[in-house]
Amino acid sequence: MREVLHYLTSDQVLHQMVAGMPMWGLLLLLVACIVVLSKGADLMVDGAVALARRTGLPRIVIGATIISLGTTTPEMFVSVMAAWTGNPGLALGNGVGSIICDTGLIFGLMCIISRVPVRRYILNRTGWVQVGAATLLVLVALVALWMNPGAPVLGRGVGALFLVLLVGYLYLSYRWARQSGLVDEAAEDEPLWGLGKALGFTLLGLVGVIVGSRVLVPVAAEGAARLGVPQDVIAATLVAFGTSLPELMTAISSVKKRQPQIMVGNVVGADVLNCLFVVGAAAFARPLTVPPNFYSFHFPAMLLILYSFRLFIRMNTDGWFKRWQGVWILGIYLVYLGLQYGLNLG
Image 1 (cartoon, helix red, strand yellow):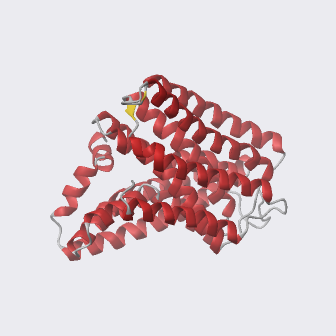
Image 2: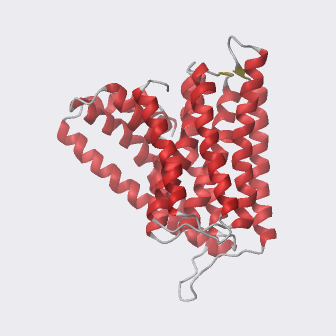
Image 3: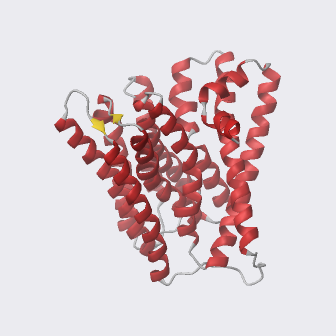
């Protein structure tokens, strides 16, 4: 078990594994990863819908807690290992970059291609937690900069605080769902799965998504390098995009199955967990030094996207996100990505 976890959490091991493969082997493995990702996402969404029906919780809450906790676990492992091996920029960048990608790319794109509902009672609460957690991270980082301008550090105390807040968020999500009076919307002719089967499908799909996404990125990066794609382009696209691949595949599957509530819940929950779970666990494992470009580039981009999302929740009194709102959020992400590559701000 320890060896399996080592293979799935170590980028170096994964890259070494694919480096010696022939090009046809990389293509076969790439196709296999896409199939595993797609099937895993389908199973996970089916399991999440069944869990919502069995427990009576709204699907948006299942997406914001169980699914988000699962899809952000690989990022947590990567960030903790990066912090432990003395790479705080990667550890912090993994959490902040995933927030930007989850909301900017995934929600923005899904909002453009699909009609996405606004569950105001839930989003008016979890949406504030989403923005509040990110704002707290930036404020703590600014205090660290004020206390130590030369090398601002997020210490173990910050990590412990974030992990405690994570437990509070999961508890409040459950309370809010119960108090809302909202229940899952289900067709009467759909069979009701047992709790074990629903949980089993969710976990099996989650494993497929995690394994597929972790193997796909080094395979695609190795193939792109052999085709002559520059390393900086690979770093600014495939690697940055790779850690949010589980959330993207879950979003595509949920929209395809006409369950956009799971996508919205997963994006909001993943943003909260990337702050409290990913950054919190990494800082608790080893204090994180905050690189200067986070203050001038990554933090402003993250807050602009999240406060735009928060504003759209407030604006949409008719119960639906608008396509132009998805265009705006996706546009911010594309500008962020372009500046990161073109001007090397990342």
